[in-house]
Amino acid sequence: MLNKRFEELLHYVNKRFEAIDKKFEELLHYVDKRFEDMNKKINILIWVVSLWLTVFSAISLILRIFG
View 1 (cartoon, rainbow, N blue to C red):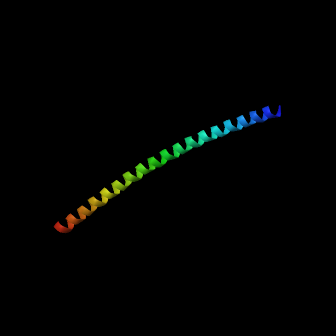
View 2 (cartoon, rainbow, N blue to C red):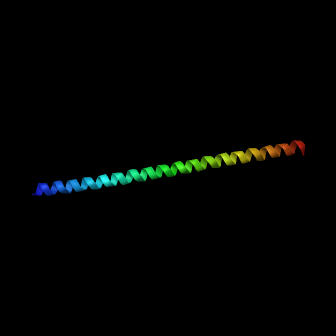
View 3 (cartoon, rainbow, N blue to C red):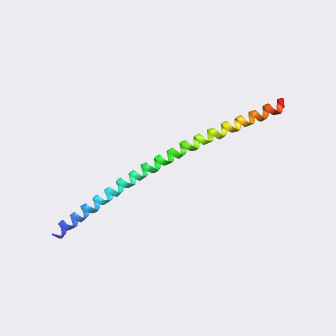
């Protein structure tokens, strides 16, 4: 009787751990997606700033030469 109860409890605990593992996997997937999204935004920001600095430098150089 005690063995059967212990086995049921062990089965229940294993199911709970499986559920927790699944939640952690979902959480890791969500965090990975968030980091990928942030990485994309940062890359776009870097390109925009680089383009802006290039245009500003070119305009500044043109004004120095012809101004």
